[in-house]
Image (cartoon, rainbow, N blue to C red):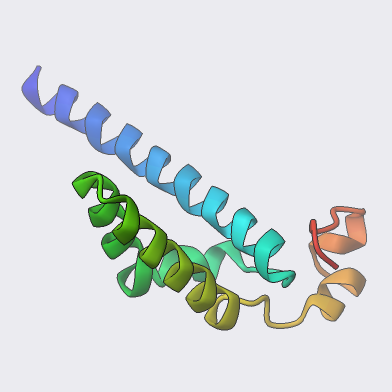
Length: 102
């Protein structure tokens, strides 16, 4: 029973984390006006995610704002899609799945 419960907790925590990262990636795309790769966002969590979540847990508004600005700049620079023009021809965009920012 205990291992089943902990499996559910781990699974739901992972899904919530994924949704949060994708939401942040979407926000960064809008704010920085670049196409952001959700894959790169998910892979670079050590560079931004843990600090940002720590600030949220501390409920320090100034620290949250500071880390949010750092997160936007970091992901806007390092999490850009590699070849958005290629995606329009052969990738996800060929099926009319367009990013918010093109």
